[in-house]
Length: 307
Image 1 (cartoon, helix red, strand yellow):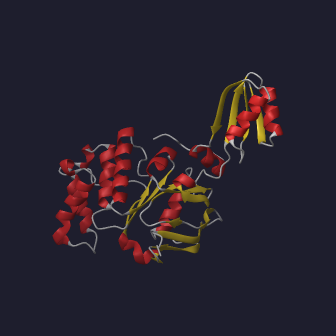
Image 2 (image 1 turned 90 degrees about the horizontal axis):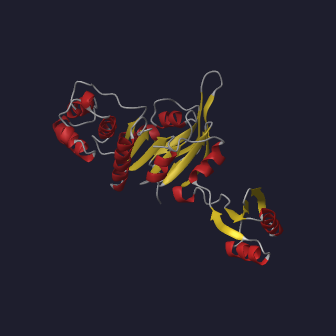
Image 3 (image 1 turned 30 degrees about the vertical axis):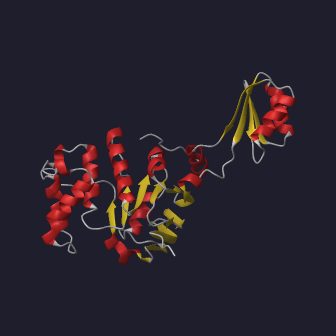
């Protein structure tokens, strides 16, 4: 039986004054997955992460990491929350050694080796001796991820790891996350960037106003959304009549086009009836909703789909 890397039941956070930031969230993050925790800013993502990491106390509910109470399993977790903080005048390697020295569970005898391995894993070996203040944004974010890899981690929790990065830095971090996951580490990525989540995540959870409104493998998230058939024609009225007579739902007409939800009806059956009815067809296509369409439908607002 596979134990989820993260499981929460009824996780809730209510702040003084009655504000409910997280409301009864039931997360299930499969081990070995790259789980995208997606939602507009202010939807409760960071508050949920803080509860998982023991940084704030839930008002109600439970959370487990690999089947153990979350606080007891934190030694297996590396986390990056709300951006990195390093000494600008120290090198990348020196910053990692300083962080490692602050960890009472770390072995000082192996610190240099582990720092070098972490830098190598994120592609910063050549810049190990370079001062942090001279690092690009992408390099800074990779160093932050390296800091979570100083000891073996079974789970990485990354809050907005590509926030503020240019396209090159974003690609660097995205590829790094994929590489880390390929080594067997579960990666939990919070983001508001739909394009990034869609490209690198195997599973997705969607937050809206403190609630988890959807959760599934990425490929399945839009499978239940209705597809539409769109007919390009000079006789829109006749085409719409055929779609209506077929019993299709949400028949719409626009200049030069008629469309409807196709449901379980075979597309070839629709086109055949249009032809038999004498409708002149210039174009015919079945349009399936994009992931963005699904998310907008779930949350009631748009997402930043850029990178």
